[in-house]
Length: 476
Image 1 (cartoon, one colour):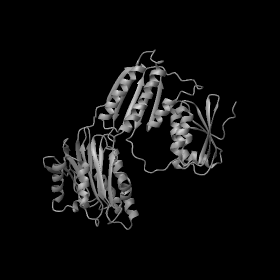
Image 2 (spheres, one colour):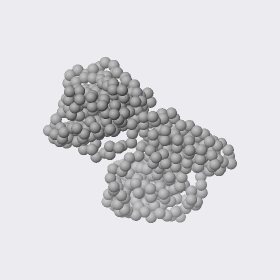
Image 3 (cartoon, one colour):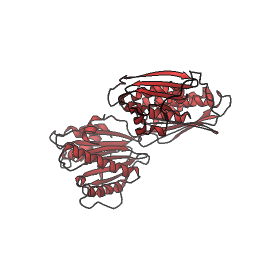
Image 4 (cartoon, rainbow, N blue to C red):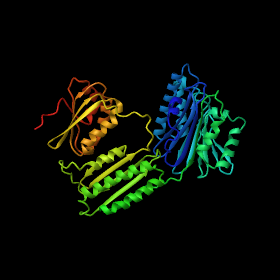
């Protein structure tokens, strides 16, 4: 992540599961674009990296080097590599990329479930672990010189267990220069003794004393959180009156897992709709007996995955009943991903959501398009016309899913009236096609063979998940 991108992000980002994390950046006026700092939530680990690439001819080149190194590191971590192996791979990479040779970095990997911390460095200070009673130890682990120079340490890694009352500090070289002669250690000990293990207070105090005529001063600080790492599992009788217990227990688990109030509301709403569908459509409003089972687990990135399952026999609502299908629509609007599997042994709904973040900008749907909705027999047809830039994708997606009742009713789109920018159309259609496919009713898209819309559909690969045709068949 480049300095510009980092500075534009809100610092109060949602914490990864299992840790209270603070990140502070004090932009400097020297050699912009060279600094590299990122937080990478993985499945069951969180990787934190701070580093600096050598001086480059231009800022753009420096930022490009940072992005290539970030991609190479992320690939290693996603393949399950530990810090020492990942940094060794970067040494090898820098040997083939001279512009990256000489890069310094500190890579720390934290496992919230075990509270274990591993570190590897390349010409950069290791992380500090500070206890409340004034003890400071530096986690070196596997270390070596800057990338593609010196001799990387090929030995084993040191694994430290972070105490519940300890704080971990990772900092840039520039921040260390702001506190010379062991001043950084004295500063952190004093602050922790005064304020306790407060990651935000520590980062802000350390960066406050840095002069403006240096490079970027960056600090990451975290403590293990008291979040619950246990999975959630509850089965209740498939009766409408029993769903209140389910909502209550799920709310308690989400709160204990550190999920925000906003996301907790979204999960409870979506799970409530899925469970109500099981009771109503799978068990005939509870008259068939049976159970509704909900399981949930939190990943290292703070994302939550919940399944709602039953052993009933699904009954589709009548197509003519316009009051039906709202539950699936609500689920899709509340979650990042919704998967529905209906089989002979029951229905399983999987709900997935990442931690919510504030919108990156205030753009609203530009409203440069129109939707004309009509029912043709048991099919919903929508004529889409106008321009659809990227900013229109969320509103268009909502409009189409509403027309199809979240994918319950078959949906056919006439795109012959679309002209100009179609990026928003393509983005929205992927979500709509997924919803239709999950409901067993493939999406049909009609666009003239020689049109720019047809070209965009083919380029995006939508023909693989939807039926693309030249024109819709005449209504009967």
